[in-house]
Length: 156
Length: 145
Image 1 (cartoon, each protein chain N blue to C red):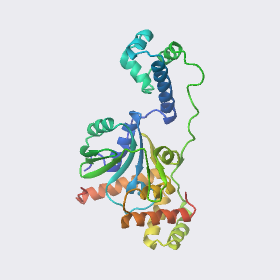
Image 2: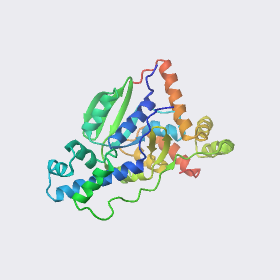
Image 3: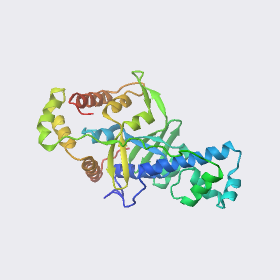
Image 4: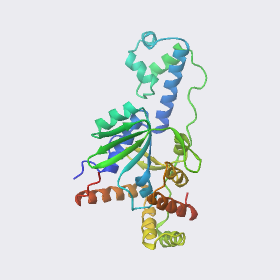
């Protein structure tokens, strides 16, 4: 059995990051699940604003194993699960849209928990985030189509 | 239940960070070292570091002493950012209608039904659904790495 399941561990991590005065957004497939798309990749993505060494300290304390650690992206494992941590502040996506942490967070949507608040980007911002990176995989295109379908129903 | 510990509200933490930044900036602008200010305030350097890093556990008397000592006037605190809205949901009696809308947008009917079911749950229930799914995967021995 899990001590904590990966998403419970992600919530614990977000709480710990906030206690260190950092910030965190849940992005990627886990965030998409919260928007109703149950079929997802089995890794976990978090966009964080915290110093790299502080993040490593928190991850180690929570039992993560650090995989790779390069500027802007830290990979860690919790039991068998892969967690990607994005540490950049802003970037431009394939549509030349500015994707900036502060703006994405300001438009974020919340899940209120006993331990605090989990923030995920809005649907429109999830689409922007999906368009980061050099190549859009078929999975990304499928996710974007799903999110656009949600927007077209009037959900935002 | 996920965790028992009740953290401070985000708005309080944000204001504590603003206060700490104001103290830190004023100290540096006056060329005062942390050790000197700590001595003036009759506190330890770690306590001053806590204050400057926005730790809301620092006592009110210490906060006031620092503000007065550094002659920080005016409004240090700012209005909180507007509260974020919760994840969108649909009402349970609109599930079929919503699934039909998603199908019209090109989704497979089964995917649309699953999405409508999930979106009719509260955000907390959706998170619990994810936890349940993860527990089942673990029991099935799925290696994710």
